[in-house]
Image (cartoon, rainbow, N blue to C red; front, side, top):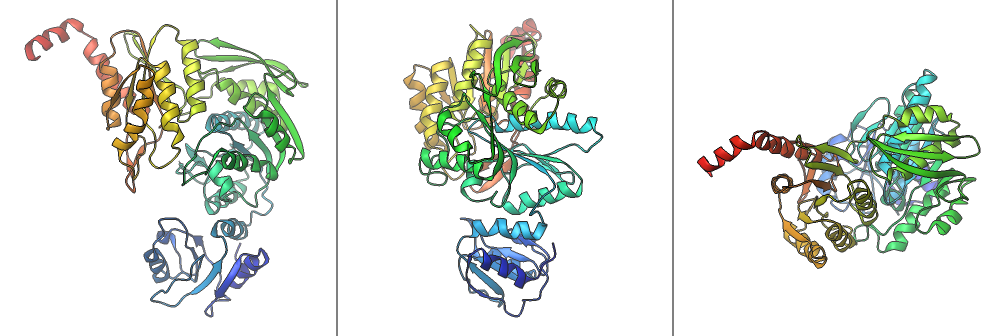
Length: 516
């Protein structure tokens, strides 16, 4: 929506955000863009100064490129005089600007927001599959998704960098979806997005609350569990219909908060659930769930392993129920859904190794994954490869170490986005918790080497769990985000080497004697 700089100022004044300003004669300038990355500045654009790593050099660069004004919480002394608007809270300002710039005040979209400690991505893809199938039968375009794996809005399809995009990107994707006449957009909503106002000004047709467990507790994230929990619950303030999992921890409190929405639909194993999970059965290549509600009673096959995926499927079924999708469409869609980096299973040719790649990276996801593996691979050895990120979620170092050590025969600690924190320090804080359980533990900095060594040491039937990164194709080292193979790629390379060595055991033995 083409607006002049003065009009944006008036909007911010009306919202009570303006502290001071000097438009420097740019009042009638038509704003061409609003960005916070100086590399994306256009002539006549607004540049937003934000972020803990913000440098005044970025602002100088933006002004040199022709931005008409900058908005910040600080007045900067730039070499070249520029219009500026000083605001109280840059986080609260960004959604206001985004909504006005992209004209998404009343988007012609059915928006679904999914929050929870575990399962957001898988649930998002289950729901997208159902809605895509529903739309295809009506000859409509496929639906949009904003997930931690990828972004698709009808115009853009790319790998995601954040679980929930910043407000400017989020509203751009909504506008793109509208332009492409897409009817549904499904998105993950992180606690950070809720706490820092990224989704402010957005109304959701459906808000799904999956589960809650202590996570993301650190100076850079949430100060304590209550801060984390309240951030998650705040989603209900922006929701028409709340879909709540009655099986989650603190379900009573979640259910009470859900009544901030106009309507509440519950799901789970509880007999009080509106959409009830009657039973779960393991099948070859997936799980089967029996679901009962006032509109249908059906068996659904889900083509992903992991008992916990029944919970994710139930959440998607509940949302589809609210949208009026027929049960037969839900069944058809769920039969073929696979989610990259989630419960991906690979096997060695001799059948001794079952490797599972999963994004599990917090206490709740570790507990559910190990419980499922214990049920589905009873009697087999378990070897686990994982790490913890630097400078965040410090509670994971104790919790994941204890859980992995308790259920594994051996644990390999390795890199998982150490960032600015020394990897050796992260290892020192995880390893004692693993060894406290009596489990053998090795620390190998390079993730590829850790996976290869874990595979090479396997002698009998074993489940190899490679956890934490999923399909992420990078490592955050220092301040850089460096390309790195995904866990699935690492596992496939390691198994290929294992298969090559073990394909001809006699030849391998001769070679070992000759060169050993």
